Image (cartoon, helix red, strand yellow):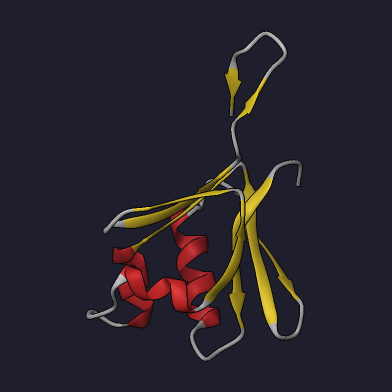
Length: 102
């Protein structure tokens, strides 16, 4: 994977459900899961998104996306959170000519 981004999740009862929700919301790309024992790294290339709607399918109708932070110990990339989703994306860098790239 050239530009991996995504969450690093503490191991727990809901990890497999969260991984499946992330896979469902990113069907256009391969989602890689790296098990490190006490945590798992979940990553895709350049941009990974998970929605509250999909998380609720797996974790229950009352699940609030703001609760996601309690299982995320870290992340790779830039993270943008809203009340509806969380997006991890490649960090923009300045090029030598001053342009921003994604």
